Length: 561
Image (cartoon, rainbow, N blue to C red):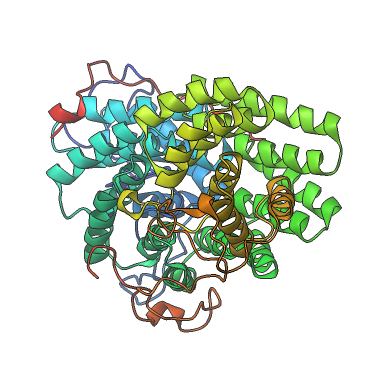
């Protein structure tokens, strides 16, 4: 991404400009002291989107190194590169651009920078009020420059993805790609959108294009997520290892370490996941996802006091519904029903708060209602969500809600979809497999139920403080499989092998993996290692008042090209 600095106005060059939204519109680009303008190519809403701009010391005419960039410059570089900015730097950028835009309301590029910064601020802190501010700033950028404004289109795609409005993210992202097909920073938001919409072939095509245009750390982190969704564990681990090794800033590295911790957790490696989560928090204390990850791993290790402290710290950094739900379930596991109910009430409160700001938390709410509230309400909400976002995660949640509501026949159809490779069901998720096993058990399909419940515990023996023990109890109730030669009629072909299930003796890793061993994240030399196979080819302060935008209708995506 190009970075253009606003240079100080020479002394005596003219009278001071009036400050405020009523300032005269400049005839050309305005320049202001102490601030930077950026050609924004970022898509915000995902901490690992985009690629990396490495800041090397620049030399003056005398050969002396110039001073290191300040917080605003660092944040502009991070935001414009699609990588995480440190929260203090992000706050400095927002303050700087708000002040600049009060004096220069026709600066479309600064509006785009500000909008992306607001999105990142909301995503990092869960202060949902920043999302409407981000939308206002990005649409203002389009009003000021309605044509050829790929920066604003990128920002709107990232904003929509952060709000989980994947149809809007797809629309804005495709508009940006049509305008600038080689603009690599658009593709991460499109990958999120296609995944959320269940279009996994489009996800893989978009990743191929991204990696063809960019191979930096953030692009590798995006690839890791896609590989994980395909069940390519070794490739996912190798890609995130490369990303962490190549990270240029503590904030960026912390996000990648947290992602590595998630991968280790998903495969049931508690100590390794805890190692990565702690490394992430030590690198950037604001990395809330790693704090929640610590809570998850510590609880599974039986270190409940530490787990509770970690979850509370994560909620303080980012009051997100998912963290409240996980903490509530841990309290319930410990027999602390009153404390659990407080967290469950908080889940509903946070979902309602986010909805006001345009954030779609229906997936988390549906999971909560199915297990701890009103399963019928969960079914109603998740049917609507399925119509909007027919991805694997929603299929699993809807299937489970139907099971909890007593409709196991329909529930099984959705559970089978989560393991149907033709519909993207390749992820190795203990939760998804457990849900399918319990549904099959209720239907009297003892053989498939036994296989899937056992598989869930093989994938991750501690996948949930409440459901992992339930899986063990269900397996014990099912008993041993029938003796050889006495077929279990309930095991007649149910498509489980074809749709991703495993036999009771286990399953080797997917044959299409690269065969690379899972490297220690951030190990020396990882950044230069070979690429994994490419899919398809083989508590925070409220936001301050923002500057008022100039008035004019904003174009729709189809008009802003």
